[in-house]
Image (cartoon, rainbow, N blue to C red; front, side):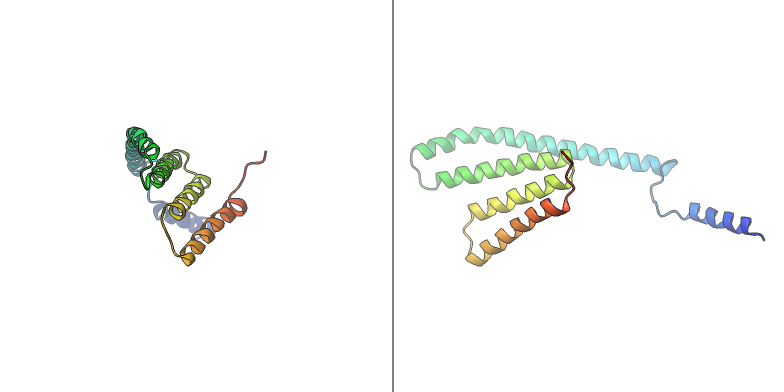
Length: 149
């Protein structure tokens, strides 16, 4: 046996035992495209459900405003909590559409901030929350690629 036949045998083995499970060309490529299409469809449907939920929830805003104007106790906190939940839902839709790390870090910052503002925490829990937000700012500034202006 010469080196040419050994090399071709190794290349043939490499083709047979490819680490890529879903190959692009054959039947497996069709399965991959089918799974991708199905999961994309599920994402679109769930995104539309979230958007519909946000739009339906807007009818609650006048009720909360009336409660604030009437001076009901806790109505302002209810408005803040409601607004933060709407913002998080909208950001979640943005994350699903954009699918980049920067948008994920943004929604995490909003969610942590919402939890810190809405709920009453002990001092050490607030410190941990602020440290988490600071860590997310550091990740955003130093680790995520920014496009040059």
